Length: 314
Image (spheres, one colour):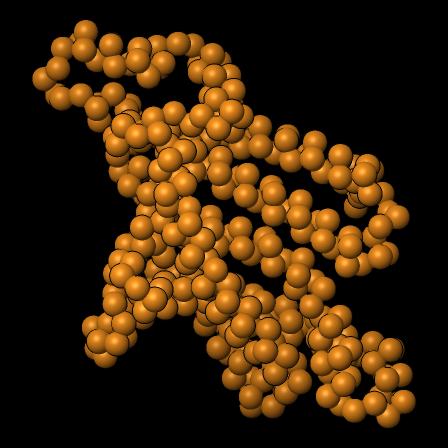
């Protein structure tokens, strides 16, 4: 277990270094931040002073090493546009995004798991077919179209829920549904397929032969085994929702990390953009590590096995 943990930590460090290189390289081509910070009629000397104060006059390798060293210390620099520490801005917006993601997870797992069970138990029935058809719609329609449709129906036509902003619990409903709908369909389809596979297994046949109640077989045995792979992907789905909340937060003007990132793109605020990508990579790395450890704790068969990535096996 300790060897596995050390291997995973080293792999995580390598992934974060790769993400930092991508963040640094990608956003260097987003535009010249000096143009956003000085007036058009400022002198060349004034532009040179601003560039020097930002460290943009130094060689690219030096800028990257300084970027990595500062990020390791939690120093993400100042926002070019807002002139505030980037870390403070991220920490202000992060709980707001987590609030949205938590509501979306509650919706996705609270509806997706029961729907997947029903679709499996009623396979071939009109109920199961209806759930399958609904899942195809949910997995195919882009999030921004879902958001616009929900705003039109529940905010414009019915006037039941607020369309934009973060003004109270009711303002969380539409963004949470929009963000969680795609994950709901994935969870539902996974639960359905896993449930059908488990129901065909030998130990379920043996349980039926013993005369156990159908409810006990379905929910005491089959569903418990089905939830193991669901737990495995749950963490990754949470990370995905945090990373891809950009669209939902933009549609609903939800003041979280995603909206901050879009505003930073418009302002060519490179420190915020780079920090957002680094934070996303860090969250995915931590969640992936936690899921790997949790999966090995849940499934005893993996505890004595070597890491397939480290051993080179497939």
